[in-house]
Length: 322
Image 1 (cartoon, helix red, strand yellow):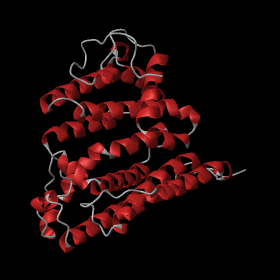
Image 2 (tube, helix red, strand yellow; image 1 turned 180 degrees about the vertical axis):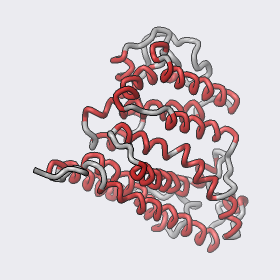
Image 3 (tube, one colour; image 1 turned 135 degrees about the horizontal axis):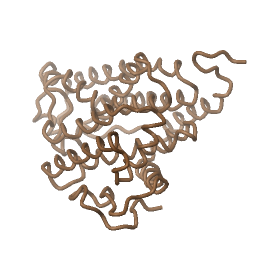
Image 4 (cartoon, helix red, strand yellow; image 1 turned 135 degrees about the vertical axis):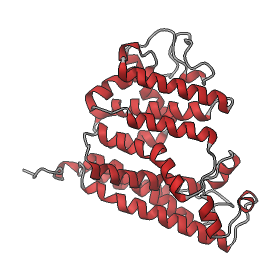
Protein backbone atom coordinates (compact mmCIF):
# COMPACT_ATOMS: atom_id res chain seq x y z
CA UNK A 1 0.00 0.00 0.00
CA UNK A 2 1.27 3.47 -0.84
CA UNK A 3 2.10 5.95 1.91
CA UNK A 4 0.47 8.69 -0.18
CA UNK A 5 -3.04 9.50 0.99
CA UNK A 6 -5.48 10.07 -1.87
CA UNK A 7 -6.27 13.72 -1.19
CA UNK A 8 -4.58 16.98 -2.17
CA UNK A 9 -2.09 18.38 0.33
CA UNK A 10 -2.98 21.11 2.78
CA UNK A 11 -1.08 24.29 3.64
CA UNK A 12 0.95 22.47 6.30
CA UNK A 13 4.62 21.61 5.75
CA UNK A 14 4.97 23.51 2.48
CA UNK A 15 8.37 22.68 1.00
CA UNK A 16 8.55 19.22 2.56
CA UNK A 17 8.88 16.06 0.45
CA UNK A 18 5.41 15.29 -0.88
CA UNK A 19 5.24 12.07 1.10
CA UNK A 20 5.20 14.04 4.35
CA UNK A 21 2.80 16.83 3.42
CA UNK A 22 -0.42 16.95 5.44
CA UNK A 23 -3.45 15.82 3.38
CA UNK A 24 -6.23 18.34 2.93
CA UNK A 25 -8.75 15.82 4.24
CA UNK A 26 -8.08 14.61 7.77
CA UNK A 27 -7.31 10.85 7.71
CA UNK A 28 -9.21 8.45 9.93
CA UNK A 29 -7.29 6.73 12.71
CA UNK A 30 -7.19 3.50 10.69
CA UNK A 31 -5.86 5.34 7.62
CA UNK A 32 -3.24 7.14 9.71
CA UNK A 33 -2.09 3.92 11.37
CA UNK A 34 -1.84 2.18 7.99
CA UNK A 35 0.20 5.11 6.65
CA UNK A 36 2.63 4.78 9.56
CA UNK A 37 2.83 1.00 9.22
CA UNK A 38 3.61 1.26 5.52
CA UNK A 39 6.28 3.88 6.14
CA UNK A 40 7.88 1.77 8.88
CA UNK A 41 7.84 -1.54 7.03
CA UNK A 42 8.89 -0.32 3.58
CA UNK A 43 11.40 2.43 4.29
CA UNK A 44 13.69 0.77 6.83
CA UNK A 45 14.22 -2.97 6.72
CA UNK A 46 16.05 -3.16 10.06
CA UNK A 47 13.09 -1.60 11.87
CA UNK A 48 10.76 -4.17 10.38
CA UNK A 49 13.06 -6.99 11.51
CA UNK A 50 13.43 -5.60 15.04
CA UNK A 51 9.71 -5.13 15.61
CA UNK A 52 9.09 -8.75 14.59
CA UNK A 53 10.41 -9.77 18.01
CA UNK A 54 8.02 -7.47 19.89
CA UNK A 55 4.49 -8.40 20.96
CA UNK A 56 2.10 -7.90 18.04
CA UNK A 57 -0.18 -5.71 20.18
CA UNK A 58 2.63 -3.16 20.51
CA UNK A 59 3.58 -2.96 16.85
CA UNK A 60 1.07 -0.20 15.90
CA UNK A 61 2.59 1.94 18.66
CA UNK A 62 6.11 1.35 17.33
CA UNK A 63 4.93 2.10 13.80
CA UNK A 64 3.64 5.52 14.87
CA UNK A 65 6.79 6.28 16.88
CA UNK A 66 8.98 5.26 13.95
CA UNK A 67 6.91 7.38 11.55
CA UNK A 68 7.46 10.40 13.80
CA UNK A 69 11.22 9.76 13.91
CA UNK A 70 11.50 9.13 10.16
CA UNK A 71 9.47 12.20 9.23
CA UNK A 72 11.41 14.42 11.64
CA UNK A 73 14.72 13.21 10.20
CA UNK A 74 13.66 13.72 6.59
CA UNK A 75 12.23 17.19 7.24
CA UNK A 76 15.74 18.11 8.37
CA UNK A 77 17.72 16.20 5.73
CA UNK A 78 15.64 15.80 2.58
CA UNK A 79 14.69 19.38 1.72
CA UNK A 80 16.18 22.07 -0.48
CA UNK A 81 18.07 24.20 2.02
CA UNK A 82 18.82 24.85 5.67
CA UNK A 83 16.31 27.69 5.97
CA UNK A 84 13.48 25.49 4.69
CA UNK A 85 14.51 22.63 6.99
CA UNK A 86 14.61 24.95 10.00
CA UNK A 87 11.14 26.32 9.19
CA UNK A 88 9.68 22.85 8.64
CA UNK A 89 11.11 21.50 11.90
CA UNK A 90 9.69 24.50 13.77
CA UNK A 91 6.27 23.84 12.24
CA UNK A 92 6.61 20.12 13.01
CA UNK A 93 7.33 20.97 16.66
CA UNK A 94 4.21 23.14 16.79
CA UNK A 95 2.20 20.24 15.37
CA UNK A 96 3.67 17.95 18.04
CA UNK A 97 2.65 20.31 20.83
CA UNK A 98 -0.82 20.61 19.28
CA UNK A 99 -1.07 16.80 19.32
CA UNK A 100 -0.44 16.74 23.06
CA UNK A 101 -2.51 19.82 23.94
CA UNK A 102 -5.50 19.60 21.58
CA UNK A 103 -5.31 16.27 19.73
CA UNK A 104 -8.63 16.75 17.95
CA UNK A 105 -7.00 19.51 15.87
CA UNK A 106 -4.21 17.28 14.51
CA UNK A 107 -4.47 16.59 10.78
CA UNK A 108 -1.20 14.86 9.94
CA UNK A 109 -1.33 11.03 9.88
CA UNK A 110 1.68 10.76 12.20
CA UNK A 111 0.03 12.78 14.94
CA UNK A 112 -3.35 11.10 14.48
CA UNK A 113 -1.71 7.67 14.80
CA UNK A 114 0.37 8.81 17.77
CA UNK A 115 -2.65 9.82 19.85
CA UNK A 116 -3.65 6.33 21.08
CA UNK A 117 0.04 5.53 21.58
CA UNK A 118 0.53 8.61 23.74
CA UNK A 119 -2.64 7.91 25.72
CA UNK A 120 -2.29 4.14 26.18
CA UNK A 121 1.45 4.18 26.90
CA UNK A 122 1.38 7.43 28.91
CA UNK A 123 4.17 8.97 26.85
CA UNK A 124 5.65 12.36 27.79
CA UNK A 125 6.38 14.97 25.15
CA UNK A 126 10.08 15.34 26.03
CA UNK A 127 11.56 12.47 23.95
CA UNK A 128 9.73 13.71 20.85
CA UNK A 129 10.78 17.29 21.53
CA UNK A 130 14.39 16.23 22.04
CA UNK A 131 14.49 14.45 18.69
CA UNK A 132 13.32 17.58 16.89
CA UNK A 133 15.98 19.58 18.75
CA UNK A 134 18.65 17.20 17.44
CA UNK A 135 17.53 17.67 13.84
CA UNK A 136 17.44 21.44 14.37
CA UNK A 137 21.02 21.29 15.65
CA UNK A 138 22.03 19.46 12.48
CA UNK A 139 21.14 22.58 10.50
CA UNK A 140 23.71 24.78 12.23
CA UNK A 141 26.11 22.51 14.09
CA UNK A 142 28.08 20.19 11.78
CA UNK A 143 31.33 19.80 13.78
CA UNK A 144 31.81 18.73 17.38
CA UNK A 145 34.53 20.35 19.46
CA UNK A 146 34.71 17.68 22.16
CA UNK A 147 33.58 14.15 22.88
CA UNK A 148 31.34 15.66 25.57
CA UNK A 149 29.45 17.74 22.98
CA UNK A 150 29.07 14.63 20.80
CA UNK A 151 27.64 12.77 23.80
CA UNK A 152 25.25 15.64 24.40
CA UNK A 153 24.15 15.51 20.78
CA UNK A 154 23.46 11.79 21.18
CA UNK A 155 21.36 12.58 24.25
CA UNK A 156 18.96 14.37 21.90
CA UNK A 157 19.36 12.40 18.66
CA UNK A 158 19.63 8.77 19.82
CA UNK A 159 18.72 8.29 23.46
CA UNK A 160 15.08 9.42 23.11
CA UNK A 161 14.45 6.53 20.71
CA UNK A 162 15.54 3.94 23.25
CA UNK A 163 13.54 5.64 25.97
CA UNK A 164 10.43 5.58 23.80
CA UNK A 165 10.94 1.86 23.15
CA UNK A 166 11.05 1.24 26.91
CA UNK A 167 8.05 3.47 27.62
CA UNK A 168 5.92 1.86 24.93
CA UNK A 169 6.91 -1.54 26.36
CA UNK A 170 5.77 -0.48 29.84
CA UNK A 171 9.14 0.22 31.51
CA UNK A 172 9.84 3.51 33.27
CA UNK A 173 12.66 2.98 35.80
CA UNK A 174 15.64 5.33 35.82
CA UNK A 175 18.05 2.39 35.82
CA UNK A 176 16.63 1.00 32.60
CA UNK A 177 16.62 4.44 30.99
CA UNK A 178 20.30 4.91 31.80
CA UNK A 179 21.22 1.49 30.43
CA UNK A 180 19.22 2.27 27.28
CA UNK A 181 21.10 5.56 26.92
CA UNK A 182 24.41 3.67 26.97
CA UNK A 183 23.20 1.38 24.17
CA UNK A 184 21.77 4.17 22.03
CA UNK A 185 24.81 6.41 22.37
CA UNK A 186 27.16 3.49 21.71
CA UNK A 187 25.18 2.42 18.65
CA UNK A 188 25.08 5.95 17.26
CA UNK A 189 28.81 6.40 17.77
CA UNK A 190 29.42 3.08 15.99
CA UNK A 191 27.40 4.35 13.03
CA UNK A 192 29.31 7.64 13.00
CA UNK A 193 32.67 5.86 12.95
CA UNK A 194 31.46 3.55 10.19
CA UNK A 195 30.36 6.46 7.98
CA UNK A 196 33.20 8.99 8.36
CA UNK A 197 33.67 9.51 4.62
CA UNK A 198 29.96 9.63 3.78
CA UNK A 199 29.25 12.13 6.56
CA UNK A 200 32.25 14.24 5.56
CA UNK A 201 30.89 14.45 2.01
CA UNK A 202 27.64 15.79 3.48
CA UNK A 203 29.56 18.50 5.33
CA UNK A 204 29.40 16.84 8.74
CA UNK A 205 32.19 15.59 10.96
CA UNK A 206 31.42 13.46 13.98
CA UNK A 207 35.02 12.92 15.08
CA UNK A 208 35.45 15.47 17.90
CA UNK A 209 38.15 18.11 17.41
CA UNK A 210 39.71 17.44 20.83
CA UNK A 211 40.12 13.75 19.99
CA UNK A 212 41.68 14.60 16.63
CA UNK A 213 44.10 17.00 18.30
CA UNK A 214 45.05 14.40 20.92
CA UNK A 215 46.05 11.96 18.18
CA UNK A 216 47.53 14.63 15.86
CA UNK A 217 44.99 14.03 13.09
CA UNK A 218 43.87 16.94 10.90
CA UNK A 219 40.57 17.56 9.17
CA UNK A 220 42.45 17.87 5.87
CA UNK A 221 43.85 14.39 6.44
CA UNK A 222 40.38 12.94 6.79
CA UNK A 223 39.18 14.78 3.68
CA UNK A 224 42.16 13.41 1.72
CA UNK A 225 41.49 9.93 3.17
CA UNK A 226 45.11 9.70 4.33
CA UNK A 227 45.23 6.79 6.76
CA UNK A 228 48.29 6.43 9.01
CA UNK A 229 49.27 5.21 12.47
CA UNK A 230 47.74 8.30 14.11
CA UNK A 231 44.36 7.72 12.49
CA UNK A 232 44.55 4.03 13.43
CA UNK A 233 45.25 4.85 17.06
CA UNK A 234 42.45 7.43 17.12
CA UNK A 235 39.91 5.06 15.60
CA UNK A 236 40.95 2.25 17.96
CA UNK A 237 40.33 4.56 20.93
CA UNK A 238 36.94 5.70 19.62
CA UNK A 239 35.83 2.16 18.75
CA UNK A 240 36.75 0.85 22.20
CA UNK A 241 34.91 3.74 23.87
CA UNK A 242 31.76 2.92 21.88
CA UNK A 243 32.19 -0.79 22.63
CA UNK A 244 32.42 -0.10 26.37
CA UNK A 245 29.14 1.84 26.23
CA UNK A 246 27.34 -1.01 24.47
CA UNK A 247 28.70 -3.55 26.93
CA UNK A 248 27.69 -1.42 29.91
CA UNK A 249 24.17 -1.15 28.55
CA UNK A 250 23.92 -4.83 27.67
CA UNK A 251 22.78 -5.72 31.20
CA UNK A 252 19.36 -4.35 30.29
CA UNK A 253 18.49 -7.62 28.52
CA UNK A 254 18.41 -9.37 31.90
CA UNK A 255 16.00 -6.80 33.36
CA UNK A 256 13.18 -6.80 30.78
CA UNK A 257 10.84 -9.44 29.40
CA UNK A 258 12.28 -11.89 26.92
CA UNK A 259 10.56 -10.49 23.83
CA UNK A 260 11.89 -6.99 24.43
CA UNK A 261 15.24 -8.49 25.45
CA UNK A 262 15.50 -10.14 22.01
CA UNK A 263 15.06 -6.76 20.30
CA UNK A 264 17.46 -4.90 22.61
CA UNK A 265 20.04 -7.67 22.29
CA UNK A 266 19.79 -7.33 18.51
CA UNK A 267 20.60 -3.61 18.80
CA UNK A 268 23.58 -4.25 21.10
CA UNK A 269 25.00 -7.07 19.01
CA UNK A 270 24.40 -5.09 15.82
CA UNK A 271 26.44 -2.21 17.23
CA UNK A 272 29.21 -4.56 18.34
CA UNK A 273 29.20 -6.15 14.88
CA UNK A 274 29.80 -2.74 13.29
CA UNK A 275 32.72 -2.10 15.66
CA UNK A 276 34.13 -5.56 14.91
CA UNK A 277 33.89 -4.78 11.19
CA UNK A 278 35.88 -1.58 11.73
CA UNK A 279 38.53 -3.47 13.71
CA UNK A 280 38.65 -6.21 11.05
CA UNK A 281 39.91 -3.73 8.46
CA UNK A 282 42.55 -2.38 10.83
CA UNK A 283 40.39 0.64 11.77
CA UNK A 284 40.72 2.16 8.31
CA UNK A 285 37.27 3.58 7.59
CA UNK A 286 38.70 6.10 5.12
CA UNK A 287 39.49 3.67 2.30
CA UNK A 288 36.16 1.85 2.44
CA UNK A 289 33.05 1.68 4.56
CA UNK A 290 33.10 -1.28 6.98
CA UNK A 291 30.09 -3.54 6.53
CA UNK A 292 28.56 -6.31 8.59
CA UNK A 293 28.60 -9.46 6.47
CA UNK A 294 25.43 -11.33 5.57
CA UNK A 295 26.65 -14.31 7.58
CA UNK A 296 27.08 -12.12 10.66
CA UNK A 297 23.61 -10.64 10.17
CA UNK A 298 22.12 -14.12 9.95
CA UNK A 299 23.85 -15.10 13.19
CA UNK A 300 22.44 -12.01 14.90
CA UNK A 301 18.92 -12.75 13.67
CA UNK A 302 19.24 -16.41 14.58
CA UNK A 303 20.21 -15.53 18.14
CA UNK A 304 17.33 -13.06 18.47
CA UNK A 305 14.87 -15.55 17.01
CA UNK A 306 16.02 -18.21 19.46
CA UNK A 307 15.44 -15.73 22.29
CA UNK A 308 11.91 -15.11 21.05
CA UNK A 309 11.12 -18.81 20.68
CA UNK A 310 12.31 -19.56 24.20
CA UNK A 311 10.63 -16.51 25.77
CA UNK A 312 7.74 -18.58 27.10
CA UNK A 313 10.16 -20.47 29.33
CA UNK A 314 11.86 -17.44 30.81
CA UNK A 315 10.47 -15.83 33.97
CA UNK A 316 9.58 -12.19 33.59
CA UNK A 317 11.44 -9.69 35.80
CA UNK A 318 9.87 -9.35 39.20
CA UNK A 319 7.84 -12.55 38.77
CA UNK A 320 8.45 -16.19 39.50
CA UNK A 321 7.76 -18.86 36.97
CA UNK A 322 4.88 -21.16 37.87
